[in-house]
Image (cartoon, rainbow, N blue to C red; front, side, top):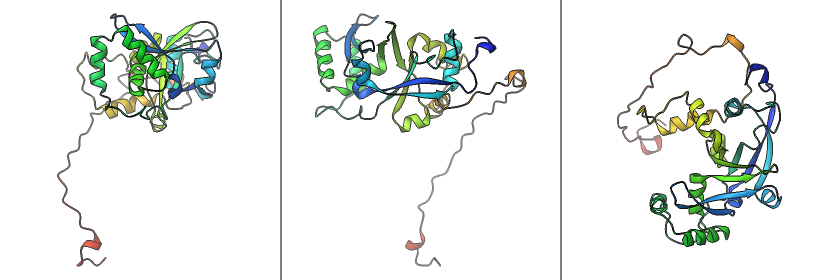
Length: 264
């Protein structure tokens, strides 16, 4: 995307928010690349019913860092169109989706993952779909949502597969997670992590700090076009080693009301 093709600094974009509790009522079985029977959720926005059922709102948002990088990867014909990201980025609201679907054994995601890898029969996966449609097995439904994402068939008949991405700190408080077009996820990860492959490089990270960093580019912001006045290179960037603090075991505190000799 050329500089002259970049969005205006005050441009706002339409982003959909979908209700997960309603979305997981649209399961469909499919065969994975590994030949296993699994579940993905499919919505058809061409008929209107699915859209009315799951769409919570469509909001105008400023171009945050994630949208900026997504635009650079997508190279849209019109970067100033409010609909630029509408079919490539959305927000899922999980409020109400974590309520237990009913009495039963405690759900163990690791054990269920082993079951999926071992293979679930076509008949069993079809029955599980029926249970999920009726509002049951929410834990298993959410497992498949984060594993395989969901698809939306838009008005132009094009189907897009959305997969889980990230959340800002405010989104986490509101039980919201961003989902992005799977076609661009890997390129986005590469760009947002500056090309670093943490696993390959065997870089140890503190999970809470890592996800806090990733959430920053979901925060609302207004882009400033500094041109060549601001360049990030070895002369302008300083890397400071993380400081680890060690605190000795603290003694029990004695408050004034427990210490009769205190003047307080």
